[in-house]
Image 1 (cartoon, rainbow, N blue to C red):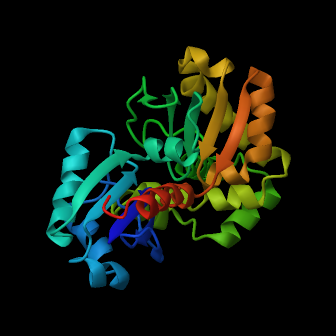
Image 2 (image 1 turned 180 degrees about the vertical axis):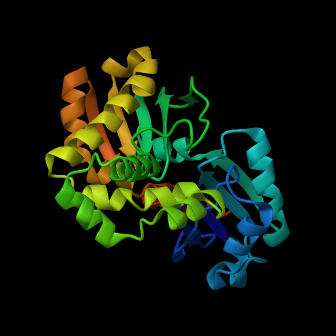
Length: 288
């Protein structure tokens, strides 16, 4: 049995393949970011999923692509968790930007971006990824991500910068009491995931002037701080993966016109094409 996973802080998509490359199951678990969660949390999120528990002794290979896996320390941290569960498995753990690049299934250069709960950006030369900036996570970075937009909405709501009609709608959609917000942010696990849930409200109400301004300020910040760090960015396509990018395609195109950038394709769920590529290899060589 082979497992392939694409993980963010909010959710992990899993696909299990047989040795012949046939899909055994597709499931989701909560996010498995080793930079955010303690080992016992990671362990529980995996072992509590019945489908994973049932095949844990049968898994021979794990291909894991995840947010927070950009350093050797983080990868080893996650490997220790996996090793306690999938005791017979060899594993390869990579940063989620590699999943984004591989999901494009192209050998042509481009800039590969992630816009989901968090955000990231790398240059892909057709074979390897190159990154100039080390992400410091949701508090200091993650421009244009779900948690970035969630933070902006809450700030604007409390600073009375949100239009009144939208503020009333926002208040009716969530519990925005100060005590609840502070408890979620400072006393609970994964506050980045909590903030990211508000990004959905922005997307659902994105056509008003206020929302368009918030969205495009975030996208411009992402372009200037992340994409433009690569001198090739105005010569190659800019690709995106992630739900935020999927739902903000129109706004991304408009901001790109301002900067003279070329938008490539947007992949919402990279695990599908990752699994297809692996399945093809397994079908051709079942011993892989």
